[in-house]
Length: 296
Image 1 (cartoon, rainbow, N blue to C red):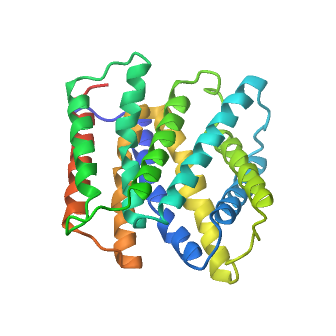
Image 2 (image 1 turned 135 degrees about the vertical axis):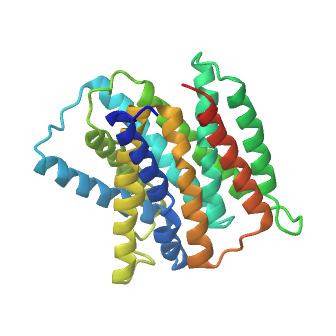
């Protein structure tokens, strides 16, 4: 049996970490939303704290913050994409269960494959089979246990989050201009863009930044959001994408819906219907099959 290379071990490990940590979004975000904290405030503090943590790490590691104008443009786009993904996800929490919303984002590996098609990387038949099966799984997942429909707005927002996340992954994988930027520095600038975006939203909307954030536990939740599903998840995603490629890195996000569903069920007592379990199972099996069969 062929041994995994060092790059593969690092890449697969990082991909698993990405899935688990991103699936922790509901654990830290839902308690804040339930207390009435505005989404823009939650995400501003999340990104601002993440930038501070990463900035301190870069300074201690004596890494240069210098980038070219072209790199700045690409990093700006990456920041806006990642920011949009967060906005769509947290807005989806207002319409559908947090575990289901985070699970629907797992469509992003299939979306990555479709985007690669437009980049003239033609998927093989297992990829197309996985695409069909995964969307079938989503249709099943978005029906209630009694046949009642789950709010389509929440589903659309979750799918929007998955789409921009997929574009984010493809750019990291394909852009030669940022190939020499360290994973930490790439993450720092992408999150810095998000912090400024949400600060602007707070100012324009007249939102009180600390509304609903009144206790020490609330601030700990914000730090948790900044550290695990933001800093660690984004940095490990960049590491995985660069070591094993965009598609394989994205499929390891299978740990994301598992984590999100477990948290939603165990922590927030969200319903775990047969349709949701069946839909998730079909989607996970389909995407895993796509990676196992294809050799790219």
